[in-house]
Image (cartoon, rainbow, N blue to C red; front, side, top):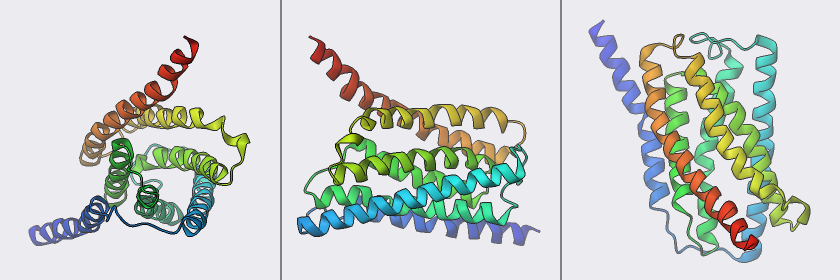
Length: 235
């Protein structure tokens, strides 16, 4: 039994290598790389279009699973469904691909704000731990996040294509980001407090520290970009 436990722990340590390497690569991306503007624009359009389709597919797929199987708060209930396991795995992998959000900013000759870097690194860690350890409550942030990303990348695509009608969405996207951080997390913490095994629930509590930091950063971004600016315009 001790040998099996040691082997299991070793495998789990091995599982943590890919995100560490990916994050190291993300932080050491060559910032002086540039692309010809037309090629960059085409890639940006394709990037956002792909994420709209994928995020929308994830949201609808999770909705179907909830419709077919009900909303149940039990350990290993949804992860016992192979389709759910696959969807969460693909959604987890998409968090690595979303690093390109930052790379595109560098390719334009700009620098990302700390909020974006913190957000992308934390997302990889959060979904990595949630998938590797099969944390049941991951369906809640995955459902909400996939919906928010469908809206968010639709706005980015509209902006790239110079569709003026999408401009009103900008302020509400930040509000949606704050909503997805606050409400679903409170919901998950409450309903899985007594149903999730202690080890997994403790991982969730650790991840909440990242969420709190993200709420503060998004809150400051919202205040500086919308409340402060609207007050100045009103003067």
